[in-house]
Image 1 (cartoon, rainbow, N blue to C red):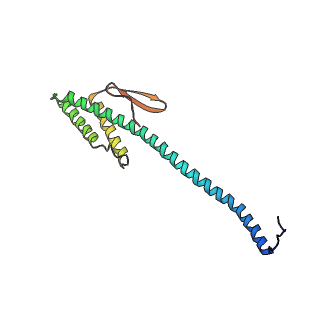
Image 2: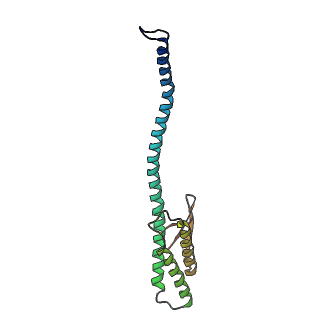
Image 3: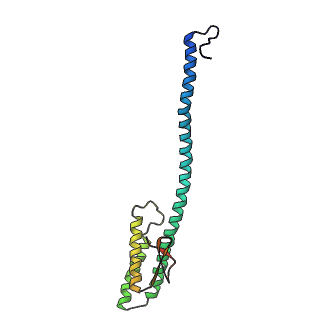
Length: 160
């Protein structure tokens, strides 16, 4: 109780006890705030890592599927054009070989590669060039707001 001193207590020591109690109450708010922040930060960091891993896995799989389709398409055309000797076929073969070279140099195992999207756009462009030179018909439709393409030789491909 304030103002009541026990036997042998001085007024200064009573004031010090009251001040310590007051400081403990005031500091409790700061301490709980700091502890809550730290706990929230740790939990958010771990959840962010999990969410980032899921996001990366999903988009990496999409890019891998797209690249695999391009590779399969290019190898199929290489087999078809292997025995052809016409001038148009030799131009197509050069485009096929250029696409295969781009695919072989694509950094499959390095997701931190700085020019990954530039190289992917270059591969997509070479694939479009091959489709145009081979007159392969493409079908286009809208699927949930993203542009999607399909051809008779490939799966459905997102072209962003």
